[in-house]
Image (cartoon, rainbow, N blue to C red; front, side):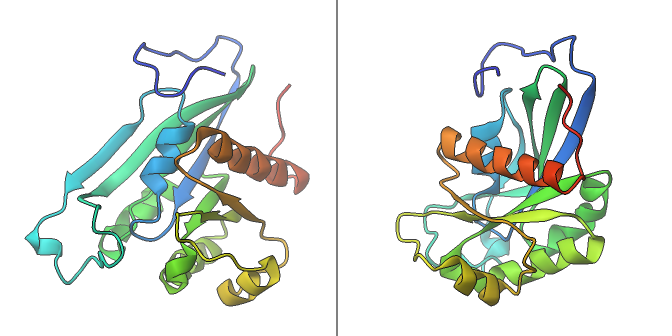
Length: 200
């Protein structure tokens, strides 16, 4: 596996025979851009724009005073999972006004990692509903901010109204190892449910 965010061009090994598209999604400010950046072995493509006065009253920045940019189209990264399989990571915008992009971004996606902030759990309902409506297999990944409250899995599953087969994972999106563990657990889940055949 190549090093994350290398400044040198990184090309797929010639042994790679397949690629899989995974969405990284969630509400505004939950850490999607950070997770894609932590995972990507190439310098990630980002479409972040500086937040302006036009977003006042539209984008809720309470508890996020340090946030000055927002994704307006997508984030893109890549990770070579093994010698024959690459994962393409597509981060979606969080605000509903950018949801028309969802249809294009989700086309052909094998699954999605839905980031959740338990400090603002109600903000996740619309995103999870979108995934269920589109029939995209997904896992919930709780992004552990410094002041994130911890809840038992059964309590979190009930609060998010998740089916028993939806995995609930935890990570710090800033930490590459933690982000990678979430990705591997999700890929294993897709493999175990016969959604993904892992090339060897």
